[in-house]
Length: 115
Length: 112
Image (cartoon, rainbow over all chains, first blue to last red; front, side, top):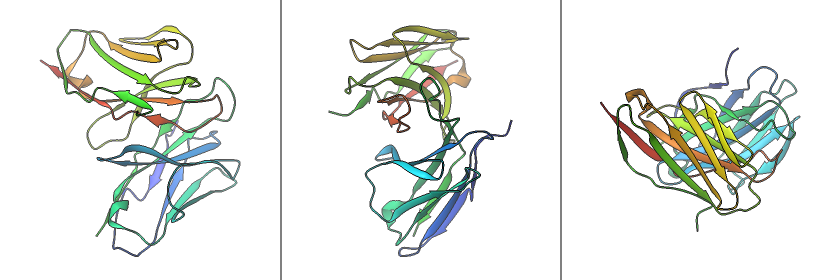
């Protein structure tokens, strides 16, 4: 069974630009969450989508946004990039909503460097 | 107070010994508890999850949960050099709530 896939794997952008990252969850998984990992802040939750709806959102500015498509694939967008946005962006998928089915599986991540 | 706390290490354990990793959490409403392993330059890999008080064993790994003490641990028996990695503890507050809150991780080194 294929795991979570993320594209691109590496990205270099300059300040002020915008970027779109893509995530395809494990087949049959309907929930996608996004996380940012930096050496200083660790792993932080960005947002979570289920059935094309954002269900949870972390404490990130509005420059960070996302969406989910009907096939459960998800994209996240960061506008007006800042140097501090340099990070590993991770996507995690989960089978569905409900008790006892909480395990999240991470993709390989997208390494974003902002110059 | 951080929501999820781990000793950052590094924790050094001889090969073949038991590695013990600890995690405490502040939200008494936390329901689901996870241990992820992360090798340098790689993404987190889920190795254990536990939802009820007590022990849960899977191969060389045992997760222990004590909700009264707000404490979760991971034991790795017969430690191997390939176990050298950063171990991340994560919790969610409610079943169905997708947000994982992570600790900062414990760096484990297995000494041959």
